[in-house]
Amino acid sequence: MAGKVFFSVTMSLDGFMAPEDVPVEYVFSPEGRNDPRVHRWMAKWSELQAWVFPLRFFRENLKLGEGGEEGRDNDIARETFERTGACVMGRRMVDGGELSWPEEAPFHTPVFVLTHTGRDPWERPGGTTFHFVDDGIESALDRAREAAGDRDVRIAGGAETIQQYLDSGLIDEFSIALPPVLLGTGIRLFDHVDPDRPTLHQTRTDTSSRVTHLTYTVGKR
Amino acid sequence: MAGKVFFSVTMSLDGFMAPEDVPVEYVFSPEGRNDPRVHRWMAKWSELQAWVFPLRFFRENLKLGEGGEEGRDNDIARETFERTGACVMGRRMVDGGELSWPEEAPFHTPVFVLTHTGRDPWERPGGTTFHFVDDGIESALDRAREAAGDRDVRIAGGAETIQQYLDSGLIDEFSIALPPVLLGTGIRLFDHVDPDRPTLHQTRTDTSSRVTHLTYTVGKR
Image 1 (cartoon, rainbow over the protein chains, first blue to last red):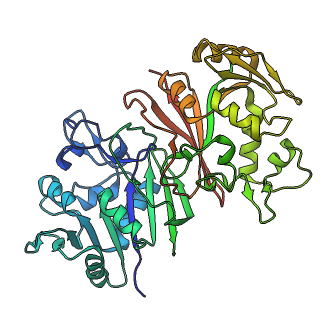
Image 2 (image 1 turned 90 degrees about the vertical axis):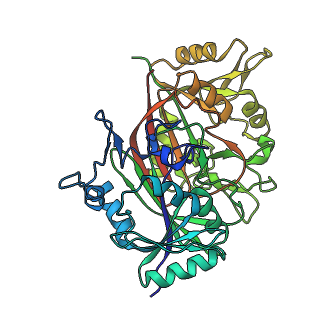
Image 3 (image 1 turned 120 degrees about the horizontal axis):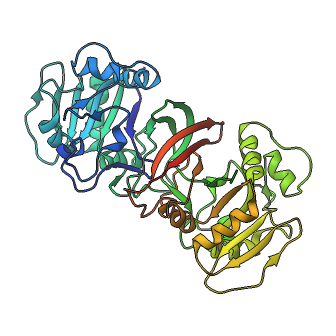
């Protein structure tokens, strides 16, 4: 059975995924124009001037050592990772990630990157290989589906990439982690969505003390 | 003990409360530019060309007769009504309501209307009296608090009125009913929110088959 195509992101209560006009390497930096309050359920900037990842799954995945919190947030982070057989992402996300991801990039799957200019694959230790695709979003998705086998394809981001796939009717389902944060400005997850396009069905809601996880399936046209 | 100041609205998943540039009387009309999909958990336009209110509370409140669905959505609609001792609303909401509310307006409390031009109180059968306040949002709230006694004051809307109270630090808590709907365009609930202003705490999440109810308290500056 073929896998599903999904995205899973964190969005502020007023609809923003990230601060606007900020290099990606600053999004997770305290020097950024907006502090990354939306991601606080996953990562906190500590008084020791270092990122702290409270959840057990991220500590394992990033090789930060033993321990960490379990519970619903952790289960969801782990389930999202484990269902994913391949990722698709926009070029800017990779550009920023090259500066901020650890040497062992955190995807551990093939990643298909939307680009206008070809580039040789970029292989990282730990199973993440970035393939640069210059012939459109459907081609990138086809290659990701093939690589994923019976696991799912994650449209990893950013917002513009997610919107392209959503507007093309290529998303089967998605999850939003909604923290109690108003950013006021930034890049919206849902911007210029064709209002006649997606019919959504609410399939699950989970709440932790930090965030509400909302899950939807997208109806076919 | 003094009551709380709250708002309780329905917002599409992409952040809109209402279609843009549409007279209020059309918001709940099938001829409107956008169908009122966001409000479907409360009201549906039937094949008989009439509004159907599926929840028992609304059927009682609007004197539509016996019956109606019970359950979490209905409990929340009833609790929201019962906690409210007075309302504050913007002038445009009243202008539209004059055309669309039944003779017995559905508030059944004093309502303080923000306006730039005075007007005599407008008394409706069933306990709703509209008082027109022309000396600012704090004055309107003071009068609403006094009228509400130990019950709560509801900032009823629209979006601009809610934003004014939120930006002034006058909201204690709020609820959002979040249906699985993308509108794509319209009037945003959170537009131009000062990003340094409100600190939110997530206090409750309830889900029905139709909608997710999110409740937050607002931290004091």
